[in-house]
Length: 109
Image (cartoon, rainbow, N blue to C red; front, side, top):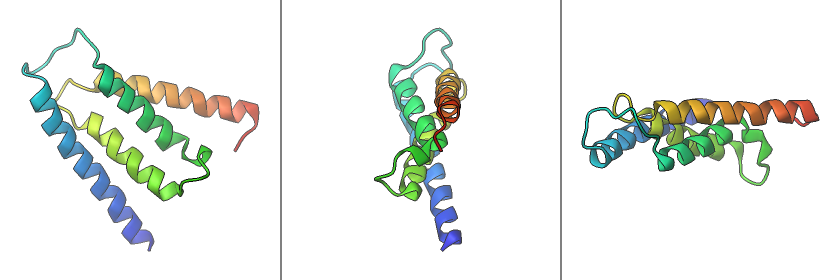
């Protein structure tokens, strides 16, 4: 059963990366734009990294489902065209890490 779960994790990541690449080619016409941050990608990245790093906080959904969805969303942003999704990923990781550290300081598991 563990091998099947790992296969599902890998498939979710690969499918998300493909969707992210297709989405970025449809959304952005220029090869690389450095000036602005995409609000939709930022929101997805924050949600995805919070779910991935803090998956044990949500008790009413099985943890495997949360990890599958979060891996799909993370790879959606990571899989965008080169240069896109980079800043959004950093912000998502930082916010999720801060929530994790706050959870540890408060004494939660």
